[in-house]
Length: 142
Figure 1: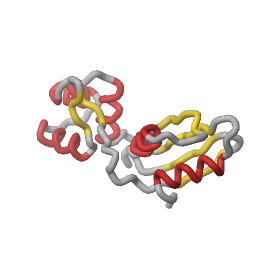
Figure 2: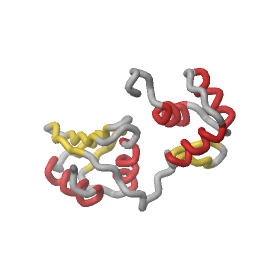
Figure 3: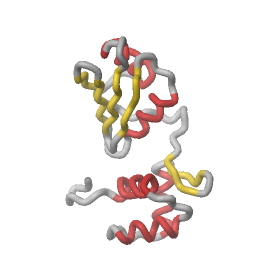
Figure 4: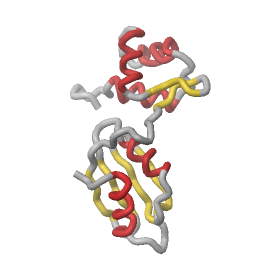
């Protein structure tokens, strides 16, 4: 949320492109206006580029390249089978994409939020084993 308690523009853009089929910037500007965000097409275009949002198969979506630098994160263990990764606002999906694109032994599944990634550890694997694999892929938590 923005300091005023209102969702930030970036958060709103990401939420709207996930929740709606957004075929063009005019539609996204309309959706943003309904949530009291007033901006020009030029400003929206710059924000989309900053957020790595691109048009794919006729709709906007966030595209994070494999070689994109990963955000810093912290990692907490929540026994018996959950790892919780916290990162900056809007960056939970970046961590999730990297984990989901990599075969990580012992990961039963992931769930990404705005700034959090939950990693469910599969039966037969330990938190320590999966944590070591995640740190190999994502780098050490900070």
